[in-house]
Image (cartoon, rainbow, N blue to C red; front, top):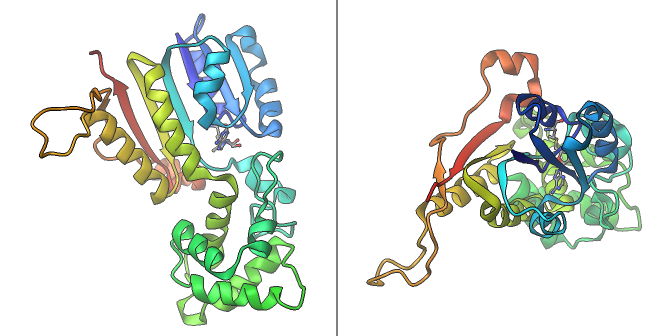
Length: 292
Ligand SMILES: C[S@@+](CC[C@H](N)C(=O)[O-])C[C@H]1O[C@@H](n2cnc3c(N)ncnc32)[C@H](O)[C@@H]1O
């Protein structure tokens, strides 16, 4: 059996998969963050040659599976977003809770960081980004405040500086109570810096042809924008034909490839949320490659 974990992180899921598929199950573990791979290599050392490590973006799955001579997988998993390690490592610039240079690149080989987006995009591009990826209704005011700070040649360089600007831009009575006022803005920047939605869409287009009949695909997402993409992609692979309804017969030839196993996503139990607060917004969707 050969499994695929496209978001290896520190290898927690991979370790469970390798243990459950012992002694012969193998796993391709992918992460684009060199530091995550370092941790995973140590954690998964006991499994020796049963694990193949790949440093790449999971959206390139077609390309790297070809170079590994792999044409079929018995299961595939994505556990999206940033890891706790990335969030907690202050110098990665993901968190508004500690002072760091605005960065947010999960793959540090990338050129564009959050600093570039905040300081180089024009007002309308920045507003669209914050509104669309952060679902932030105060985007216009926030961008106005950012532009005001930028003019006069004062770039916004740190996480806490940006968080302060966002906080001050939202009228006091409308500031969210349950989350930090900068949460949505930071989410938007992180999604854009890492092209998170584009990567997910490409992956979901590519991966299905590698799944062997009966193989399962599991995606854990952490916000509604991602969950919507997963739900739509599964639905479209489950329905097959995409021809407009007025055509008398199918001309697209697209087969029904997946069977959806979770009509509604699986969410964590209250006990799990108590143990791991970050799991509170997780949604797991599962589908299975059809037998024919
Ligand atoms: C939530 S963590 C995964 C944690 C992992 N399941 C574990 O058990 O430790 C997400 C990981 O996916 C990686 N990641 C996110 N998007 C990626 C992408 N497009 N390509 C490759 N790795 C990605 C991040 O660098 C991070 O290490």
